[in-house]
Length: 370
Image (cartoon, rainbow, N blue to C red; front, top):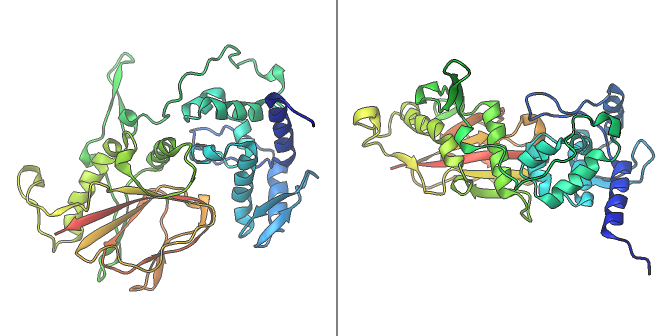
């Protein structure tokens, strides 16, 4: 009987991953790209992906590596499905969420992560060891002059500090400044009327940077769960999430009185008393994440009594296929861009379109109007 040490198994797994790795472009979360793929690799991937046509296929890697069975729905879904398969074989499936939220879309992206980035995204030590093995397996030691060889990992922490999530740095002079939360007047929704008769509106709730930071907070909280997609995670369970979105939502709830003038208006100083718009329960708002090919929601209404539904897209629209909200009353599927929200009466029948591939994360709020 042949036995192998854990270090030998790890080395073998790295070699296997080296064979099936598909170098491609990087969709960065960070302010500057971390990964530079050659135009040859990008062209090779597109040429190969274009030959795929639905169904579950047996993929032969262009470099002649071993075949990998990947379930794809179309050419654009190939990369997402391959990345999931690669992470599964590497033993990094529990890291899919935090890696994806940090901008990784392939093992080539993981290879380019620095140790500081691995730590800041919140990966535990055992997963970081695998990531380091992937990121250093073909790196020339002579190019590592800037690496700290004595680097010591501390306890993982959230890379998105809630106290600084939506703050603006105000310079006080002499290099001294402070981070300040924006006032409610700093929030602009840019509302668009989709259908006045059915009271359907679209607007912007978060910036792209805020969406990415919120995704990383939620993924850090959900890290190491057995199921890497979730359908109803209350925002209150994610440390710091509610304080981070408080300013935007307090202003939005006040704006709903303008969008829906039939609702009893608030009174008192600041217009915060006497109104009847409030979250339906203390579990609102909540987060929903679809990963891979996922069924949408069937035609339904959110509540029998008067309410308002708010649906915010946190993901980049290029990160998934499908999606959108179909509303029979206007016979239209409404698509959102990252940071945009759809607002409509909860009693209005609607359905969620199927997700064909990728990761789609949304924030949903049910608002009561009694």
